[in-house]
Length: 471
Image (cartoon, rainbow, N blue to C red; front, side, top):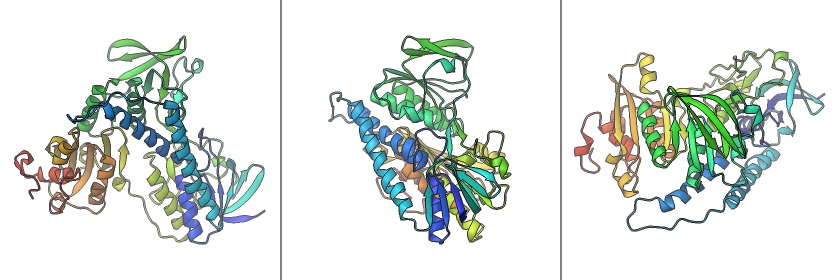
């Protein structure tokens, strides 16, 4: 039986980052692909049924919708023709290209990494079984990801429903759709299909969409989505689901009223659960929480000293880039003992609606809970010249800063391209920059990134009375 210095269980972002790092360090590594997420092959969730395909379809849907819904007086288009089948085929080609170039070809190029296809499980404290083979390892990295979690509802077993994974590959565009879940995933799919022309309803359990976001952002985005024809119910409780011909019916309570809606497709965006079941963690003693997510410290080490875990199987935040960083840090800590740590405060996240939502650091409420006395600057996008140039003034920027030191604790953006803009805020949070540091930094005019500088200036001045480019 061959013994490896490192065995990696998983084949997504965290696993690949770990494998690339181990190859750089000359560590003999076995990488075991396969997990319980439907639709995933080599490359894991992101490239197959996550970021790449969903953002491609979001982009296509946005282009199709905004071609006839723009604010420019001199441009008016007739409604274009949508070949939904071709849209899906193009998405599939993109996925195949990235799966091959960024994953299959990459793992083949790693001289010190041997790839085993199949689901692995622990059979002892230092042995893993995969497809009838037994591999022995000195150290382990668990990076098996997570899959969609469908909440138990009366009648659910009697109907066909979709998760985000199946919703990426529909053969025909549905006339109507109900999305259960009003966080990032649910809202992205709701608006994507609404832009394609589907009549969409969103049911959210909490009292606002994106409940972890700043209230100003949740409120504004909700209005923008409703302006585009999406119906949103908040504070809902699903009573039961059922069939009506080819359609589904959803009975729910919103406020004190019981309502029933009918739709062609029903999508669940109700969180994710870890692929840690059937992994044999009891054989090795790795501790998990009550939902099955692996518990790790800030060095991504588990309760077992020679086992590390990274990515979605460790719980929120489930971000592809964070998973990759965790995977690389795990291997570095395991073999170089650099004791690198993960600081979640400096990890940005985004919601790819249009306009987009992006955040980094603490919200106002989180800062106050931590005992930080904060002051906030909220800048409506209508004060940003570039927003008028592009004909879209929807959105805002909110800076959360320490009242005494003016050190930036959090940056929260609702704007076109917010996911690109957030990185200035990320650096501000990571390196402890102040509001004055942002003001002192020259920004290009006209750009949307000026919104961050204007938000900083709003701590001291009425920006509505400033000329362009005023320091």
